[in-house]
Length: 135
Image 1 (cartoon, rainbow, N blue to C red):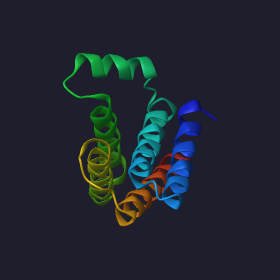
Image 2: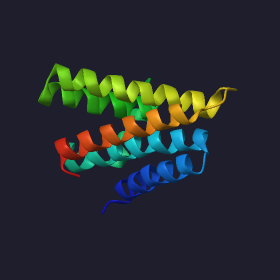
Image 3: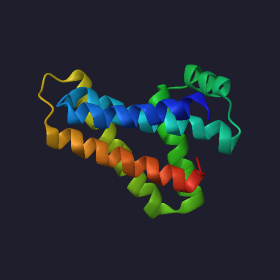
Image 4: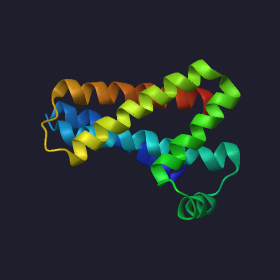
């Protein structure tokens, strides 16, 4: 199993443990990163893009790595699966990214409802990616 895929599984498992321990803010962080790591592991496996190429694209472009990965996989979903799957994926990953920003950087409390919602979106995204890209 590729290391990023393993880290993705660790992070979604950690999110559940953190929720169960009422550590809601860090659980959101783990939920989000489980998806980002899964996306990054898909690019070499299914699209032949190396990690070095990802780094080069990010360093030479206007997007940070998170935005690059989300944009790339979103475009592939749109092209290969259609608009409905693309829209659903973009909405879920966009919501999850916003939850992560609030959790990591905003001076607000993250509730159990918010952490559960982030976890649910992350598990749905991970299941979708697993189904579509067989990882």
